[in-house]
Length: 602
Image 1 (cartoon, rainbow, N blue to C red):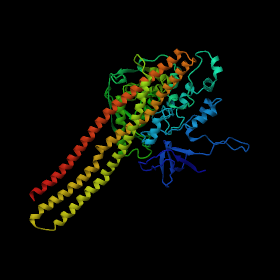
Image 2 (tube, rainbow, N blue to C red):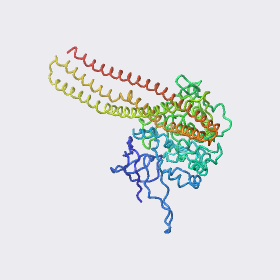
Image 3 (cartoon, rainbow, N blue to C red):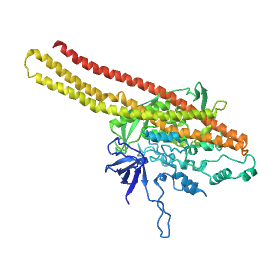
């Protein structure tokens, strides 16, 4: 049977062996087995190559149950491919058919590393806060990969093809959808006056979200707001403090700030040269001790941080690439992306101090690394329990004011995303023109001057020789200016586009963060309504509002930090860009002045 797939989003190939996709385009798959998150197939234009598996949906026949003819059932849709066997059956109850129908309507674009989201997609994510947002990675079960000398570099500890149910099994035991609870909640909402009058005051509960795959549910935000988190004692090292600053809530500053360099990417081999990988040298300023890390280590750390911090925008690591991983240009580009990533990690008051990041930066012993890795993967302060670690200042926030600020930030991120996308496209086009068009045109002019000089050399008069040399020098000057244009984007435009790529990742993170906060506000409104109707005790509703207040403090603190680093980064980068532009045109001017002086002695 021919395997077919439909493209969900546009994808532009950037490397040899990849092919471009157009949204809704039909493709023929060479194999349904992905290669490190990439599929091979043929697009509608007859081009064969690789493309991200998360950008397409495999087309299958409608599911059929075994009938009288004994025909086998068709496998489940591909977006459930990453769900462990039995997960759906374990979570399904009397209303499993209703839950499956609900899940069919919730499909969102995957968060591919460093996505270049189309404006329409980003607008849809920001304008619909209650739609479920899926994380960029499926959480791995780290105990299955304790051998860190195995063969994977760009292959992650986490799944490359996120599905609508990614990460579901991590929360299956603790926050699995209870059919009986949901039916009770639905019954209380649909009951008529006679039934409500018989209910005792305080018997009503805030309903659970029917969509159990939403970010609000999977992050543990719902369980926390409803008072179901029970981690017990919280260590002082796990506490995250939010303080009131001059501009509102903000994370408490790191009392011991530090930075970390990433240098010397080196190709190394193992198994007598059969396997190769790139190793990076990291030197943190607070230890001054060198550690070597591969891309897979960055990938593991990123997955752990995304799982642990649902209300923090974890910067995204540079994207994976199926081909050309050992080419010099790709290695240089990846290192620059990792430098930006590291800068944002060390600048964040929470992420810089978390145990996983410190283990990543400081551990040099292989045995200690594996032990620490296993311990971190068993961290209990995740999901609903994570919110227990947040310490907030006294006093409650005005929830209406919080909602207004969140809505304003949504509008801001939408406009910023459009601006980032537009600038990225313009910078890329301008860089391409400099590397190819401008260089070619300047060298074409230089070649023409050279031809004129060669013609003049046919005249053997002594008084014309100095003119011939001056024109030849001019030709060489224009040829050199063409080379300057070709080399300049590496100095000014490329760093700008690297920064834009990092912020595209941040902008894609915030819809999930906002969704958690909006979900908490919805629960507060429901509890207030129950109190007004005499169905819930005021004390219970106050508890829900207090826990929503904690999420609101954390969300506003993260927004404040985003604005702080945004101003810092773009100020620094624009200064660098303009200084490089000035230096460039000074070089061009110097070349032209040198050519001009050649005519002084003619």
